[in-house]
Structures are given as structure tokens and as C-alpha cells.
Image 1 (spheres, rainbow, N blue to C red):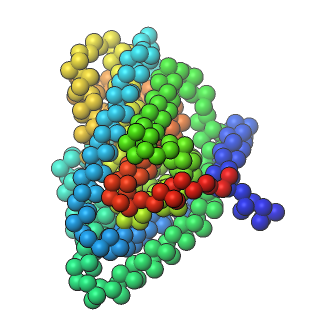
Image 2: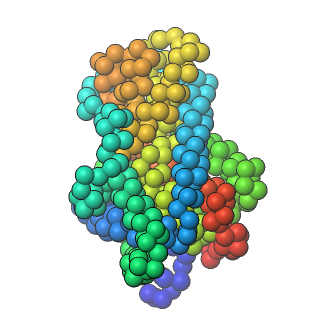
Image 3: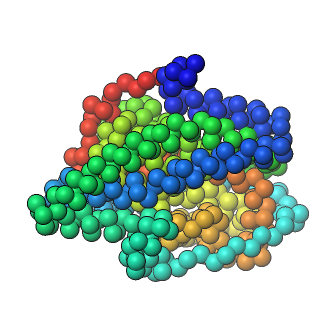
Length: 414
């Protein structure tokens, strides 16, 4: 029986866990809170491997690259694509919210105002990329600082040549060890996913979405449209690859993202499917994916655009073309400074709404209104974010000649 279980493809086991968790949560209700610890344990396990996995794979990847000058072009292409896909997401969100008129006739007077903390300034966020203490950055899980330090270590090993070979070999062996541990942790995924989904559906439920059908519909349609049109389009038209092969290769990470609502918690799985299913070599996977988990906010940008238009419609505000441009630009730029902050979409929302003249009191009302049903929509947003990370990594790997087409096109176990 145990052998049969492990012979089933992981994505099928996760899908089964999602379905069973939803059913159990609906039936069990608030009692599902008692098994949340299993989901929390799973999240702790995958967060346990994130920092060492990112560090050793990035150092090993830079060393295997052989030429540190390639890092410059890799970084420029990565940032340009992330900014571009985020802008596309916000445009889709603005269009759908305007067409569906989600906020027209909505009464926010019954909402409980919910204040949020002030977002970290962009300048401070950028300064934090350079760690005062690399070991503190490692212990705190500061991904951007870890990337910066790992790049320096990798380039340093390349510079000293044969003298650095023992450390380079150690990092390569460490990468293999961490990938094996990640594989073991992922085998626990179905049980963690079951507990998380049962908890969400039992304590919060999907029924809350019925109170805001048009807003929820706009978010769902927007997420699906962005994944298919933008990221499917990148595969088909930009890279001349099969979108079906891409989504098939990324499905394990997409399912895990849906259940955990966390790009960083999904990072080990994203790195695993990137190398094993999508043919992305370690130097790109270990750089682009951790960076994306930190700054890429396609799903959140789309959501912020929709909620911002929802708020203006609910408050009877008329927007000019310039206001739409401000919303799109502010969301794209501000996302870089807030992505690593918990509840990043709320910070984004407050900053963007304030930019077009919505008062702090009105912002607090809107956030208080959407919080009860934010979790289910957050699950969808995270799928979009993770899909975007893998899409950009695939594109950059292609352009940097760090891509294995045979692995990408190889049939996967069903």
C-alpha cells in the first residue's frame, strides 16, 4: 500500500489532499482548527530548507557558470521581465474591475475599519539588500541579502581559481544534499495541504465570497487570464515553447502555492520543478526564483488594481485616464519596496489608494471589508505569483543558454 502511494504522481496526491481537505473542512467546521498544526509543521519544514537551499545552489550555480560577467545580463533581463509582467497584471486588473463594475452599489458602512502598519520605504528596502552581518541575514531568512552575499561568494570562488576548488566542491555537494532533503519534505506535502485546506474551509469557508461575488469573480477571472494570456503567451510567442508543457511542469509548485498562500514557502518546490521538469539550470533557478519570491507580485498587483477600482466605485469617485496611469505605475514601482513584508498586498493597496486621493479612513474601511474573504483570494494570487516566477526563470534560462529543452519537453509521469 505504501509503495502504491509513492508511485502516484505527487501532483495527483496533492489534488486529492486539496479535495479531501475541502470536504472535511466543510463537514467539520471550526473543529478543523485542531489539525492546523499538521499544516503548520509542513510549512516549517519547507521554510527550514529555503535558506540553505538558496545559498548553496546559488554559490554552486555561479561557480558552474564559469564567467561572472553573465550575472549582469541575467539580472537586467530578470528585473525587466518581472516589472513587465507585473505591469501587465495591473492592466488586466484595472480593465476587469472597470468592466464588471464590482464596487457599484456596494455599501461599506457595515465594514469594521482595519488599520495597517506603514510600509517599509523603498530606500530602506534597497539598503537592506547589503547585509551588515551575513550570518544574521541567513538566520533571519532575508532572501535578498542572502542572494547578494551568495553572489559575492560565488564570484570570489571563481576569481581565486583552483584555490577555491575545495569550497566549490563542498557547495556542489551541499546543493545535492539540500535537493535530496527538499525531495523528502515534498513527500509530506499532501498531508500538510490536507490540513491547511481543511482549516481554511472549516474556519473561514468559501461562503464569505458570496458577499462580494463581482469582486471575487473579477479576481478569479483576472488570475486565470493573466496566467494563460501573459505567461502562456511568453511560452508560445516569446520562447516558441509549448504552454501546455510549461504548465504541466509547473503544476506541483502551483498546487502547493494554492494551499500555502506563500511564495517563499513554495520556493523549494519551485526550484525543484524548475530543474527537474522545466530544464532550468541551477544558476538561473537559484537566482531568478528566490528573487521572484521576494519582489514578483503579479497576483497581488492584479488584486490591488481590482480592489482600488472597486473602492472608487463604492465611494462614487470618477477616475481620469491619468488616475489609471497613476494606479498602474504606482503599483508596479511600489511592489519592489513591499514584497517581502507580510501582507504585502495590503501595503500596496494603501499606498496606491492614497496616491489617487482616497482618504486613510476610507482605505481602512475597504481593507476591513475585504479581510474576511481575503484568504481564498490570496491562495489564487499566490498561484499567479509562483507561475510568474517560473515563467520568467524559463525565459531568462533560454536567453542565457542555461536551458535544457529535452527536459522541458520530456513527458512527465501522470
